[in-house]
Image 1 (tube, rainbow, N blue to C red):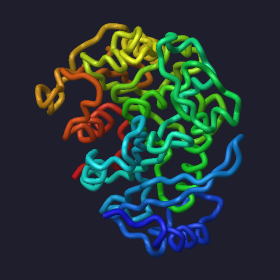
Image 2: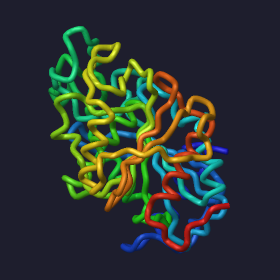
Image 3: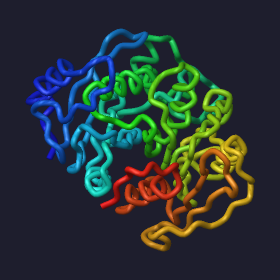
Image 4: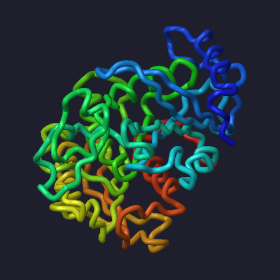
Length: 341
């Protein structure tokens, strides 16, 4: 059940802020907050365009006490996707496995209903062909980041994610060594720029793993959306995707992408893996559109996987979140206090 943004949110947030200290909050549930509940709250932030209002949803799992550091999974929605995700099963899986979910909301400034994430392509002319259709968000106009390939917001989403995380840490007992992020389509593309940007700007959070679904890196942007050694990647992609083609090149809407293999190979090298792939069994092999998952062998610092689907774009399965959490649970460093119900 989602709590209304304007009902209890202000009271709970005020209580949380009042009880927070310089140290991160692990003193129990803030007054007015219940375990097993979902909350949608407003959040004021600012960037070079000025101050503006955003929203986010978060879910506290049923076994959450607020006194033990708890892992978290952030989800970044796709371009124009309804917010929050209504059929993603995050909260059910979170309750069963004891992790916090956070769903930040993108921006649709000047493009009502087309929520998006800034992948740092604003003002560029080299990530699409001349046939691509321009979508000009107000923030891009304000910042004079104009280009024929503009298609997403130009708000500083990296700063938003960092500011939001710092805020959440004041009243939620989040384990900073077990923070993960997934995203779909534009949200997955955002992950490839978010991770290096957070590192380059020395901002929190330090996501230990990302799980992009049907997203890729734009051509000519690999120096910006660059590899961060030690980050685990579990990429999920449709073999027949023409909107963000897995083999790279020009998409049906005339944007240019790097192949999934090229991106993952660079990450594998950075993580000390060999470039040999081996098929990895999962409990969902052959179900729905999942064909198989593959892992780069002999990784030293963090795993790199790809999972292929007999589908095009937007295949999100009924078991998607379960599969993703299973990947994290069985492959990431394994603190002794992990909980699986």
